[in-house]
Length: 366
Image 1 (cartoon, rainbow, N blue to C red):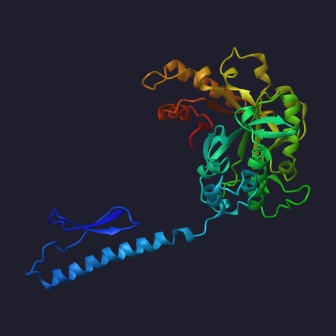
Image 2: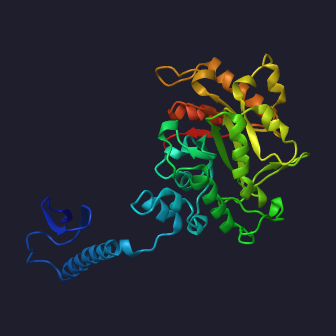
Image 3: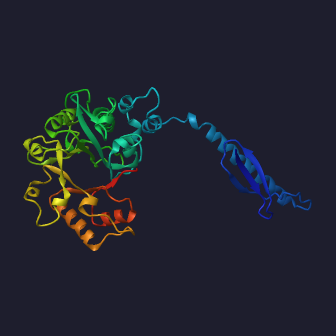
């Protein structure tokens, strides 16, 4: 049971009032704990006023908290609050309308939700945090794409369609009320479409798909499942001559075959995740010459493998910082966004990466 404490600033003794719901709360009042028979009329008025203030504050607090459960939640808050509840399977929750989300004043920030499906609420936790990029591991099984870290942990309710593509289509449909999602396609232009975040509609959300099964059969299924978003011009696309930006940019990594990405020269909606550690010096492999903004989006590398671990004190050597700088500059020369995964959690490492103009910070714990 929490206590409401009232005390006289001139005396160390405490007078406490029990409250069933309030936190421990301390408030000064002018009333002495021992009655002062010589008190003036002014002090009498002050005592009554202060006591009334304390009781009024307590009453307001109790009223607000007793009605808390009756305050309606918007859609985003409801999804976060009820995710995984009995009778609300993930597939159905993911298909909910997200109108409440689009009214949130969430500021997008350059963070990447690594292995996003391991968050308590996939997709929505990342959006609630303002992430502009998120990642999902995808497995092809029974002609569908399932989400999970290991193949033996796949769940029939956790698919790419149910956890990501369907809710994103719903959110963007609400952000763009003129879209006819029931129709087969739309003729909306690039500049007409609003992105995920109301505070900055120009931000494109990056969906990084890490293919875990062979690229040859998996990539065509991915492109097929993206068709609804593509039909309404909601995906960033290379049309053969230029990049047409959309509210969502899809990038493929893992087993993805770069040559397969290149085959589609018109209407390319899936971009490659180039190897960042091949772009940092003049001795880069000749294959690195083929990466550009028309076929790739990210250039990524394992921080531990390409840079190494920091010292016991959490610092990086001058040589490590020079390598970071060279790799990021190499990516930017090709028009790609630099990203490191498996980054140490120390704030000072993030400070170095941000100073060297990395494009997105990898985050595991939102």
